[in-house]
Length: 66
Image 1 (tube, rainbow, N blue to C red):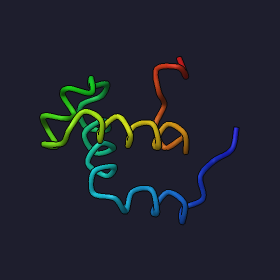
Image 2: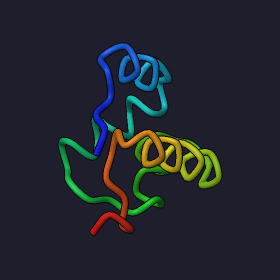
Image 3: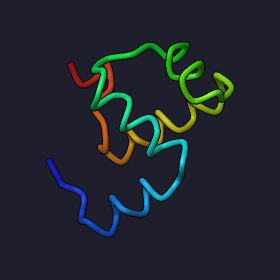
Image 4: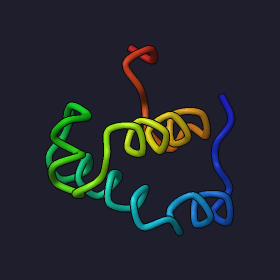
């Protein structure tokens, strides 16, 4: 298992939507995409795309990690 370097993590979190997702998940725990869409006032495809990137970069754990 590889870990993100700080510069990699900062690049990922530089996007406002991805930062919002990470903050909400850290504060509220597991949320469905529809809850993230509502909280961030973003479309489902956009949130799903950002979640996929966060999982790919291992910034968050996805359902397949369980």
